[in-house]
Length: 127
Image (tube, rainbow, N blue to C red; front, side, top):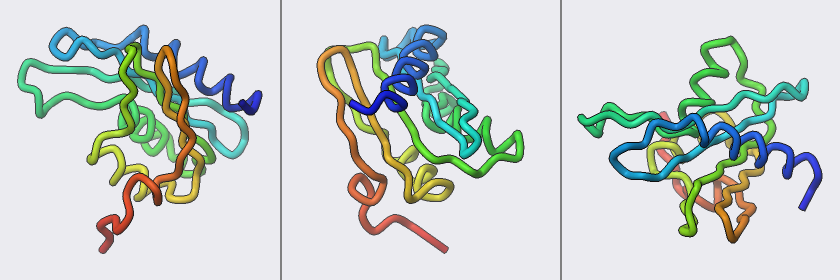
């Protein structure tokens, strides 16, 4: 695996440790790299009213956008599980909106998958 992407996955794994996931039990972290090399991370934050929860991917992307940054060049996602999970549909749509050309890596304890948002979300919604 590319050295830079392994570092990004390690950052996502670290972010997962800060997740608040008492309902699903799945701690998820994400880390995105900006064009200047800066890393912004996010974790999932669940809520008893489940629709008010936020996924790790959207958490990191929204954090970047709120800081005036749209220059995302890569995204890594880690789930603390033996199951592998790609980004959910809502996250796929947000990734497509803000970073449609980036490489995406998602991983767990046993496996790492490299993909793109075009592979994960063909025919994405646009206005």
